[in-house]
Image 1 (cartoon, one colour):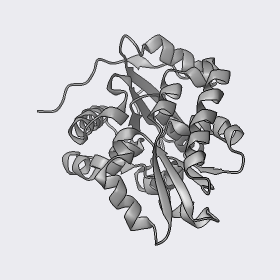
Image 2 (spheres, one colour):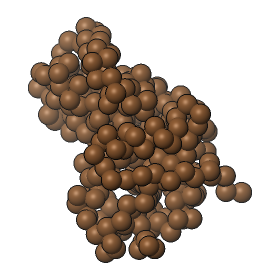
Image 3 (spheres, rainbow, N blue to C red):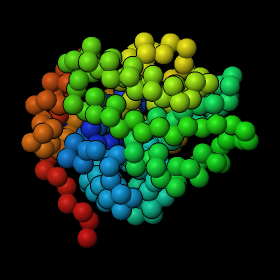
Image 4 (cartoon, rainbow, N blue to C red):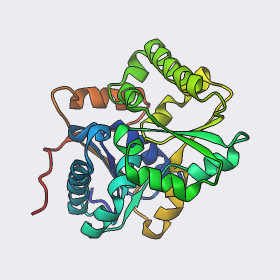
Amino acid sequence: MELHHPIGIFDAGIGSYAIVERVRLRFPSQDIVYFADRASFPYGTKTPKQLLQSVRVATDFLESQGCAAVILASNAPSIVVLDELRALASVPVIGVFPPVREALDKSSTKQVAILGVKSMVNSAAMQAYVDQHKSKPDLVVLSNASSLVDLVENFDFLNHPERTQQTVTAFIDQLLATHPSLDVMTMSSTHLPWLKSFFEIAAPQISFLDPADSILTQLEPYISDGSGITSCLATATAQLSLDAFNQALGSLGTCLTAKLVETPLPRA
């Protein structure tokens, strides 16, 4: 069945499925193309140039699928290269951003942490973004959580929950040992909300915020009445197979089965 002005949603793996669920719940008649570009995983180790290349190829691919707008469902490229991507794209592109101001407003200590991938937390663009949203003497700790993102993309969080809990607890304990006054943390990779229950067990005194909340409002101008279809497409590698991805979708209780697409080529 042909999709009616679908919304494209993508990142480098299963992390963006959480965004798909949110869009589906809010706009049940909207057609969606969910693209898990696992061949580009991980975004967290890429340079800005590599990030732009990866997300441009994915955006071009979703444009070719007839998408009316695209959600770049990843904090790192949204922070680092979104403006450049928008200048190259011919459809609107909506990014996902760490809710720094919301975290500080919620914090009693005014000391918060942004959990994200390496390429984001180490970037000058991220530091500039933080500086725009904090006031003195607020403390915003930028924490590299790439190791936790791996727990989601390799499906340890589904297949090995005890080991996942140990890893998450060790990560949070180390962060709090350095910054004991932290009381709010943002899960600023779309993979990390899948670990929220593990975070809450590791540190029940901490509030963990999902940065996806602002996307739905931004998406409203591009919503249309379709058949409520979600088409699921994915790239794969020898290490990140399509079969493993589909098994994970099933474990999450979805009815989706991803179809394999060859890694899209960059637009000339």
